[in-house]
Length: 280
Ligand SMILES: [Zn+2]
Image (tube, rainbow, N blue to C red; front, side, top):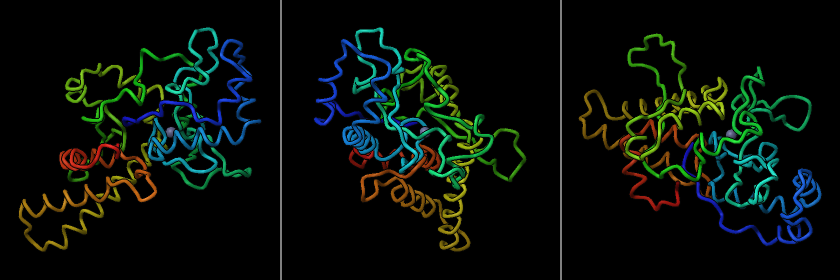
């Protein structure tokens, strides 16, 4: 999970619906009515959320694609008892994936294992894992994360390939970063658990990202000849960090952005500090 920005006003196309269904008379069924009958307004809202999140799920950072997206309520939309209209409060809404429950539109499951990996139930993540629980005080809201430092680290293959019982690609709490950011590490741990961010499916997806980076790094190293200097290695890593963390032409960020960022620490931080912060 990374810091995401939020839109500050609801898109104009949502206004007529909110007039017809005002917060004072909010009903649990209103969301389905909105989703099913106001297709255009719904599409515009999810597009605005996806754009500001640079195309990534607010929780797991998979890229949001057709058939695998939803509007996610950080505080459950079923809570209609409070003064806040959680269903349409703009700061409560995020674009997210369907947490590994997605089909490809037909009866068969999506062919991409990072989106759908049996057993489906065990591999449910994001909003699908959090369900309707009120966790506002216990976990991190994506918009409340600091831009820097990254609060997580990732289990990587140990040097020398020693068999490690710890799952590769798993997120861990970076206690030092939490201390620096003034965030309780327990809250970060609870965030990982609540969204099931260390399910096999997501660990595997992060492991694949790490392996690809490692492979690319090895190729770059090979180009440097037999005995590259420390400075040469450093400039390769800087170059790779810049390339791999860049915003794509369509405004999206690469999937599992934080995994890439962590791989390139500390170079990633100087790259991100130099780039306009709209990248993250
Ligand atoms: Zn997700």
